[in-house]
Amino acid sequence: MKILVCISCVPDTTSKITIDPSTSQISSQGLTFIVGPYDDYALSRAIELKESMGAEVVVLHVGGAESEALIRKCLALGADSAVRINGSPTSSSQIATAIVTYVQQNPMDLILMGKESIDYNSGIIHGLVAGALGYTHFNPVMHLDMAGESLQLEVEMDGGKMEVSCPLPAVLGCQEPIAEWKIPSMRGIMTARTKEIVVLPLECNNQVKLVKADIAETARKNKMIKAEDAEQLIDLLKTESNVL
Amino acid sequence: MKKVAIIAQTKEGQLTESTQQLIAFLSSYHPETIALVVSDGFKFNQVAASTAIQVIPLSDALWSDSASIQPLVAALDGFTVFGIKSIYVDNLLSLLAACSSKELISGIQQMTYANGQFTISKSIFSGKASLSLTTETAAYFSFNRNFDFSASPSFTEQSINKTATLNPSNGSKAAVIALKPITGSIPLPDAALVVGAGRGLKDPSNWAIVEDLAKALGAATACSKPVSDLNWRPHHEHVGQTGVKISPNLYIACGISGAIQHLAGVNGSRIIVVINNDPEAPFFKHADYGIVGDVNDILPRLTKKLQLH
Image 1 (cartoon, rainbow over the protein chains, first blue to last red):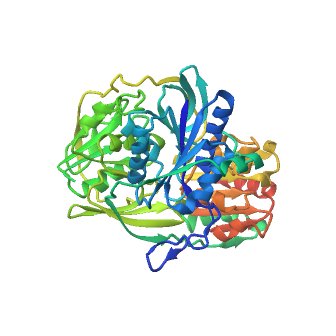
Image 2: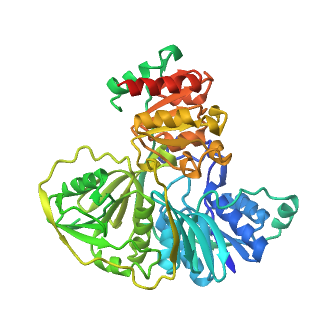
Image 3: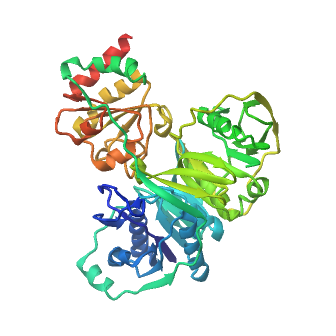
């Protein structure tokens, strides 16, 4: 069983997002990057599968050399090898095409990634990859178990959940509680130092033009109501804010 | 945009309000054809639009790979396809976009179309920022739920003309084992009013006051991540960075301090009320209305006031 886990490297969830005036794009100054939290769930489940039934786990990231420390962390968690497709992608389809091209040359049984990246929130790369490869697609997956030659999944759907039997090969978008996040062991950190990160070029063109980024500020009223007058809230919601 | 298709959402067989607004919004560009891709169980026979409506019914079977989706790919050849964000719509659009090798853009907050070019504002960082972009080649678009369609003019009622129901080609070996719909409560992502509660409630047995308030309002209930991690509340109620992202008209946060990860899931709310006994709770800075007080005292009083009217 060969499992590919695709990771995004994104600003930490507590980051304050600012714009770089010289480029009109999001500034990376002062940001701490992490492996996308949903991707971290996907990787954790892949490592669990490797430990319980044996599998080869490859981590793939599309991005620049600054992400290598985070890729190394994935190797320390137990991934066997890693691929970095070097470039600065600006659209979901560029990233999807890079993953598809890699998998066409290195076939996988299972491709896992987070249901979305927490920076661009598109949540479509798993579907784009599955569609292009002809693999089965489910998203967002909350439980994943092997059942003979296929997978048994619990998948969230609008207004509920479903349990499905999913043949391999498959591409799955993952979310909690598929696995518990893991912390690398000292031994994992040591062995990760000698594991290979293959670097490949990003070779697809982009057809979407980024114009500029803006910070969205929602102005709030910040009105305090005294605890003894709490009932006034209902009147304000009805008359001042018109939401009731 | 000569041929426009919409992945329509229905509730009890009728088009949802947001789907009707999307039809009106796209009608304002006067396409020659408007097609609605809709679940087979639809019950409407008229739609307000600028042109005759073609309905493409889809069976409720799984559309989970590129082989099964081929009948829909063929039916939508040459169309520009739109939908409003949901799990179903985004999964379907991403497979369709991949099968037709066209670009898909999701998370759209604003869109205009002129001279063959789409100008789009896309929400990023869970609504903390936005990205302006232009494209001439994208053919698939997914709008955010809180997309502002308010400027849409009204159009005349058009009768619909229906094609045969599309079924997935039998390529897929995926199969549903069990469906587990959430029953008896208002689905969180669609709710106009939401009452959320956090660890400030102290114990899962104290949730009655939250549920009573939600019931009096007709609101859905939500919770913070620590609460769902402790299994005090079901996972599907978890709102935040790694949970459900909501954009209701009103969000009332009870006993939630307002960690930045929680805010990422709720900052699309129109009005935010924060009730917390800690005056230093960071959530108050992001509130429209704040009450410093004990939830056990405040919530029952609000419920009582609502029940009196």
